[in-house]
Image 1 (cartoon, rainbow over the protein chains, first blue to last red):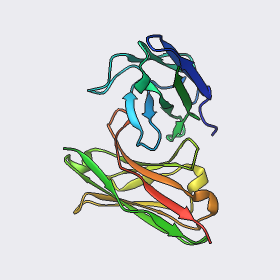
Image 2 (image 1 turned 60 degrees about the vertical axis):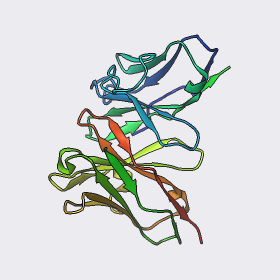
Image 3 (image 1 turned 90 degrees about the vertical axis):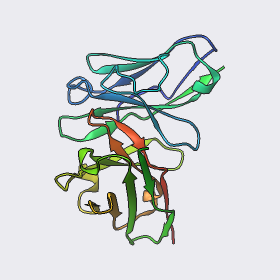
Image 4 (image 1 turned 135 degrees about the horizontal axis):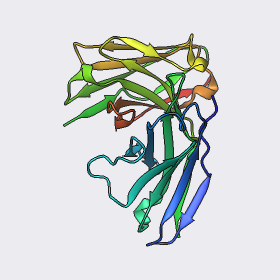
Amino acid sequence: QSALTQPASVSGSPGQSITISCTGTSSDVGNYNYVSWYQQHPGKVPKLIIYDVTSRPSGVSDRFSGSKSGNTASLIISGLQTEDEADYYCSSYTTTKNWIFGGGTTLTVL
Amino acid sequence: QVQVVQSGAEVKEPGASVKISCKTSGYTFTRHHIHWVRQAPGQGLEWMGKINVNEDTARYPQRFQGRLTMTRDTSTSTVYMELSSLRSDDTAIYYCARDNTRWALDIWGQGTMVIVSS
């Protein structure tokens, strides 16, 4: 099963909003609302920022939000801050009862 | 507080096996599955599988079947991941992570670097 498709990189200026897409198939993203997003700063451990497509764990800024339409999920970061510069990964449960990650997106805050 | 602490770095020769431990604390061990995820140098995250700690059953994707084993010890709240027949492309940081019961990984271990080299 191939990885979910994410753009390799996105960029934005402080204060702007950006969207990172995560495209799968009807066997994963399109079939379940079990999409999660992770933020990873260089040399650090991944951190859960969104689960169940739209839910935020306690302590995660409300500048992070998620959505889904068909086979594509999206992570939206509003009011960009320099500390948001990191790699972002989506993940989904699949019909084969496995999990799959996206290839990752590097966010640059200009 | 909830913690997940992994064993230290390993250097192995090709063909050998590696066994990494993942000790949990601060929550009821049997209520959360544990997943393993790896990250090769400069690469993305790769899901390796999960263990249902309560039922002691594991699930691995096809590409790891036959050389990956996940086990648990409820007396010490520890999960183990053993990967055999190591190859150079198994060189990676290996993470264990707790499933939050909502199909997401909410608590991650610090990672264990495994280097496979002759």
